[in-house]
Every structure is written in structure tokens, then in C-alpha cells.
Image 1 (cartoon, each protein chain N blue to C red):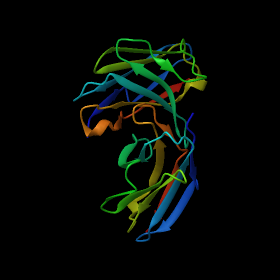
Image 2 (tube, rainbow over the protein chains, first blue to last red):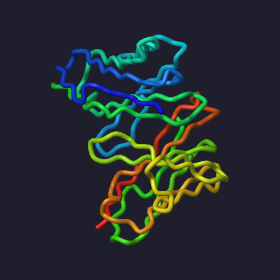
Image 3 (cartoon, each protein chain N blue to C red):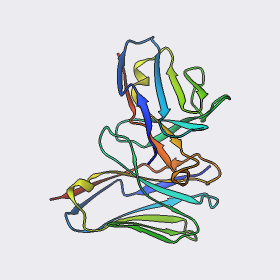
Image 4 (cartoon, helix red, strand yellow):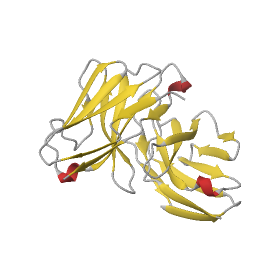
Length: 112
Length: 117
């Protein structure tokens, strides 16, 4: 089955700096890669996603890049703000198969 | 985005009792829903896939007789934790895909914090 690795487990950045979170996946058949943000005690919220026919996608301060050859995808957050502090999960799935496999999550702390 | 409602948001029960958690898709029909379990500071672990009108598909290591799933309609799936014990204490969260909206993206319920005394 799919295995999604996420490193590092924690990341601390200064407000205004950029943050990059990287994930790797194992199943070359995976073609859908979402990123979720989860605040303490809350539900995961989809913040951006990418499909395998696209190499990069942007939404304001957030972008995701995908390297199918290397089987990794990354979340980029620019101009970080304290409210970006949360746990971020990457995931992967084969689109036709709805099951998502999640990474272990990374705790992002943005220092004011 | 599509709305998934989960109830209750938290529950405390005595060891040996059963607890039912409801997951509803409010503005779309979900033929498939997913149940996850999350321990503190850990990732989301898929427990089972709930299929409307048929038996749920359980992940390896998840006891189907312990975690009963019923998906009787296109908008409701329930998870019943039977004979709950303290080790069942966890955050349970459901999710559903909206096949006709949002390009089939996965949306989560608000989660249920279960504490078994």
C-alpha cells in the first residue's frame, strides 16, 4: 500500500519568512495530493491540493509543487503569519480509489 | 466547500458501555464515508470505509465487531464503539467526498473526542 513520509516533524519560522514542508510517497499510481491544516481540537481543513497532471499550483500565499519522478511534493507558505501556526498533513491517493493515506504531520510554529 | 456534520463533539462514558457517533453530509450525497482515529499529536489513521447500502471495509487491525459501522442512507453514517474501554479513548473523525462538487475533495466532520473512564 501507499506510504507517505513527512519531514521534519516540527518547523519554526519567523513571521514573514517562508516555510516549506516536504512529503514523499511510495506508490507511483497515486495521482492526488492534498494538504490539510489542523488546529488543536479542530477538524482538518483542506488548504490546497494538486493532481499528477500539474507540476505546481498556487493560491495566494500557499503553493504546492509536485515532482512525480522523485515522488515528492511540497507545501510552500510565503509571508508566514502567526495564524499559520498549526499541524499540516500531506496525503496521497489514487483518484479512483477514494482512500487517502496521510503523513504523520508537521507542527508549524510562526514566531511573532 | 461541502459540509460534513459530526455529532456528538465529545462524549464521556463508563467502561463497558457503547457509544454511537453520527456523521452526516449536509448538502450532498455521500455514497462513501471514511472513519479515522487520531491520537494526540499523531496522524489520522483510517479505520474503515463506510459504503452506503453495503458492509463497511475495515483496515487491517481494526476490529469490525468492536467498531460497528452503519451507512443506511446517502447522508448518514454511524460508528458505534461497542463495550468501550479506556484504550478506546481517542479523537474520532469522519470524512466524505462530494463526488459531484469540489472535484471529489475530501471534507471532514468536526470530530468526536471520546473519553472512556
